[in-house]
Amino acid sequence: MGFTGLARWINAPSTGLDLIRENIMRNHHGQLRGRWFLSVKSYRSTLGSIPGLPVHSERSMCTLTMNENVFVLLEDPAAPTRADIVQNSQTTDGQVFPVPPHYRTTFLTLRPPGALEQVLHQLRARWIPVRQTAPGTQRSQGGQQLSVEGFVFAIGNDWLVRVGHVVLAGGAVKGMLLEAEYLPLPVLHSQTADGTSELLSNLLTSVLPNIREAKTVAVTISDSQWEEVLWDREEEERQLSQEKAESEGDPDSIYVFGDEGLASEKKGDWIGVDRDRRSAFLIIGALKSEGIL
Image (cartoon, helix red, strand yellow):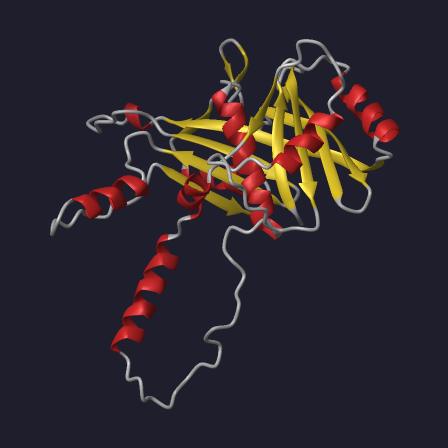
């Protein structure tokens, strides 16, 4: 798994996939590796329908199924971000702010596909799909609402390129997604604030066909935003507890664990499921920003 960049071709024609496929195979000597398929669903809460429960705004939930993993993004507009709490605690001397039960954004990884829908149905949870199949008919909780359908190409030994149409439930196409993965590096630090990489941007630009008035945008996330998404309450509490124990421990103690100072995998590196998580978060964010979800 390598470092990945994502882009949207907003006004791609229905022939966009064929044009990119021809460009990659003819001009980049690319090889077709297989199909690229993602399933995306969106839900909203119905807490406002509970008598006597004041709800300022409903919560949203989006799920993206990628292979055997389901990535779930929950957003509560009424909840603070973790950055807000940290900033307030730093600017206010001595005042302790209560830790909220959850922050504005929660990002989960679940498996197997379909398990979340079963839990929602069994618990009769107050979540309903956002999209409908036809006026007056509610789409079932297990129904697919949007998909990304395309191909995966290999360019040499260093690159994987995924391209696909964004297909709505009724069959309408809403542009394309393009994802380039640079395999040699799991992490590629960028000097720009939004985390974009010139190397990846150049590759994505080169695989696009030369079409007049093509509207393309890079889909990015800054390191601070990704840190907010990756925050883990249990992990933070474990680290604080460990730091406290180390600060209060006996420096002359003969008991050592033997793994101090060893290099460890940095959380959030673009390898394994972390790469897929970041890719899924970017795709959901891009579709939500355009109002497709």
